[in-house]
Image 1 (cartoon, rainbow, N blue to C red):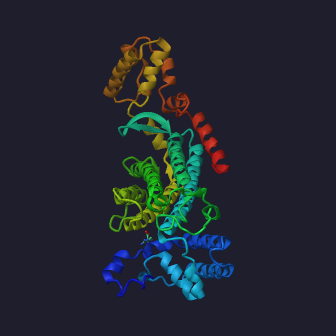
Image 2 (tube, rainbow, N blue to C red):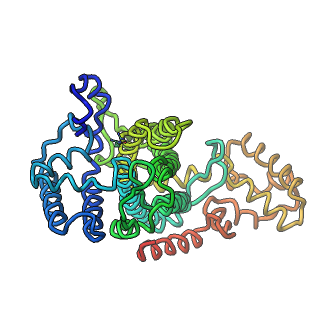
Image 3 (tube, protein in one colour):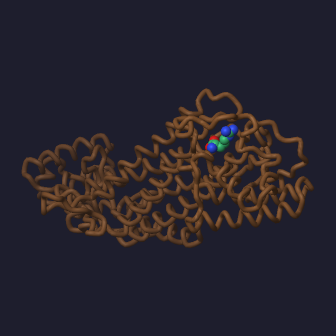
Length: 458
Ligand code: ARG
């Protein structure tokens, strides 16, 4: 392509380090769409003839179907997707192909292609996260009243409902979707026509190409247009936070599945066996979701480091933006799909959950609250009295709701039989009906609200 200036071909190592077509070939749809928009605009502006534009459009259509059907031969010697397409176009339509690159550069081309790719990928992530939310909300509705232990410090703290726990992840996914939507808004401006870095002397119509490609508007500064990758960084930051959320749930699945805990089980469809220990059923998918967070966050960090200190405008360093991002997003989409599958697949052991919910004196706060409510005791005093009752129950090795009334009255004589209405795990969960609390009626309301919103595509 630059034979005018160059005499010999590149060293093999030069080709190896320079070629990007092995990964930027995934931009072929975006690259061809951008070329189509550019050629049509050039013709409309009288920069190329209508006849050449027709040949270019037809040639690009052919190339698109060649790539889609796997017939296209990508050549590393041609460096990247842009040169591979242009070179094939020359084979197909001859001289007219050489007019396509008028008033543009690979610098604005690649920035345009990758913005289009990031937008499409964000859309795919949004659909996947909505499906994940739906699976969670459906399960939450089904288990609105299933009590389980709620944890702080991974110690049983207070009873919660399984549905409430699942809905926590629906909320997180909603904010994840919001972050992606925000990133998409800022990615939605078109670099095409910035050319190499300074714009062009040709009378191009950047509004037209931006509009054809579905962007809100052209980017206002040509140097900025070709040299920033913040749109990738923002998408990766949103991906990293999403992956962190998924990893926390994945970790809970791993813990809950352990026979030592036994709160849920996964079926054959989402577990694997051991090659040596016949009894094993391992939650590999959850472990891998937990692990994939590493490469997703790694891609963000790698690109932040690539971009740090880069002077304007385009630098070849920026070619390193694609591999990590593409890998991160395929890992993220796979992780969301796996989590959605596991949510649908998991079966809570309702009896074990209930038993564990009541263990560890998890309703001690309910007893203290009862003392405050019924006898107007200051909470600090109630906390102290309850602590002594818990110690007594522990010494007798019984749960709070099994400790005889007389034993409680020996510590606080104003306690009556009425206290037993707040000491079971179910009663405890049911009583927490404050907004955002775990009560089954709240969970039902929130799950239904989510299901309705998701139905409407939100
Ligand atoms: N493959 C390049 C990239 O991804 C395309 C832009 C090349 N521009 C250049 N001036 N060499 O960044």
